[in-house]
Length: 203
Ligand code: GAR
Image (cartoon, rainbow, N blue to C red; front, side, top):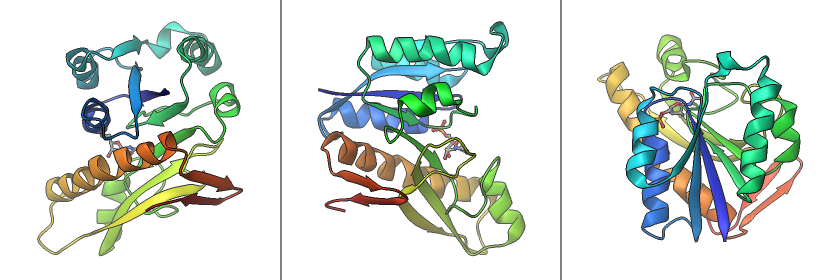
């Protein structure tokens, strides 16, 4: 059994894609065992409940530090034997408490072709810059902001007709297809990591 925990803060379209893929047997045999969410009101919480996925929902303000809530999260992950942490629109920095325990076993998806447009509002940054090609990146999580080794990328074209909304829709469509494929590759042991060189066999 390969167990996945998804961390999310918002709409949860990526969470949904991962949960649907698991339910349909398209996640390399992995199960989505837990949603971790820092915003009790976020739509992703309802999605998890509807999908029958357990939730760990918390309010960061109720803790003294990031390390304090991550220590609780870590205990929850360990008690469930989680193999892979999948960040999907989780809008908080991760501290060494989780980074060190899940080194090579934590991925994030970012809506740009990193290292371009790291940080917040990558889609807005790309539109403001006027690039004609942007995309999505799945990367390992290290201590930095969107700096971990790249696992997979996919380009998305920006045309003259694109609005913010249409570009967001294209990015989300690409993400919800690519992310389950990458998680399936981890579950099937098809990912090798040598420093910054990450290889997905069979892709
Ligand atoms: C996704 O587009 C993801 O790439 C982005 O948040 C969105 C979450 O959407 N993540 C970041 O910007 C991380 N820096 P979702 O909640 O519908 O899955």
